[in-house]
Image (cartoon, rainbow, N blue to C red; front, top):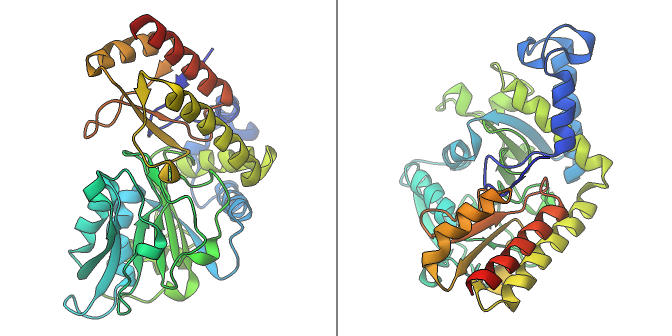
Length: 361
C-alpha cells in the first residue's frame, strides 16, 4: 500500500498513472524500448505530445485564440520569460503591474524589475499574506503592459477564489499550484503558466497558455527565451522534456476519464472542506488564512503548542502521512491536497489529527 504524500512539490502522482507507467517503462507498446529512449522527432513521441496537448486544451477549454506551449525550466523560468516577452519599449519605458501576495510573487517581482519599471497594484504583505486582495482593490496603471498575479500562493495557502471582477488589462497568472484543480475561464487572461510538479506531472516542465497576438518576433531575445520560438516549432525547437510531457499526458487522460475539471473541483472542494472544518472546530489546531482566501490545494495549519511540531511530523510520517512540514519561512504544518491525493488521504489525515489532539491536548 502506498503512503499519502502531502508534499507541495514535487507532489503525488495518481496511482493509476504510475501503474500505467510501471507497465510501459521498459517496453512502450511493444516497441522494445522506453519512451525516455525514443527520439523526440519520432512519429510515436510526436503523437504522444500532440495527444497530451489536445487533452490539456480540452480540459482547460482553451479556444483558438490561444497557443499552448510546453517549456523546460519550470515556473521560475517564467518569472523571467514573461517580462522579456511582454514588456515593450526601452527598459526605462517598459512598465508592468504586479500583485505582491506571497513568496512566489516576491520572486516574480524581483525578476521583472530587471527588465523594466514595475508598480505594485496590491499587496497583502501587511497582513503576512493571509488575505488575498480583492480585484476591486487593485490599482491598475493604464500604461502597464500587463498585470501579473500568483493565483494560489503555495506557501501561505492564500488563493484568489473569485474571478468575477477581474480588471480589463492583460492578466498574466501563475497557476502552478492550482492548475487543473477546477475550471478556469482562460479568456479572462492573456497568459497562464504553471510548473508541472504539483498537478500536472514530473518536475522540469512548465505549460504556458498564451494569447496568439502576444507571440511577437523578438530579435533581442535568445531563441530559447522567446515564446514565438516554441509556438513556431510545436515546442520542439530543441529536445523537450519528453518523459515529463509523456507522463503529464497520462495525467490529462486520467482527469478526462474521471469527469474533467468540474468533477475534480467537486472532489477538491470536498477534501478541503473536510480538513478546514476539522481545523476550525479544534481548539488545538488553527488556520489563520482569511476564510474567503483559503486555498483548496494548500492547507497550512498550526498548533497552539509549537513544541509539539516535531512530534507531530515524526508520528504522522510513521502513520504513512508524508511531507506535512510547513515551509521553512512560516513553520507549522501544511497539507498539499492536490488532485492525486484521494479523499481517503484527507480522511486519514483528519483521523490522525483527531487522535493526536486527544493524546496531546
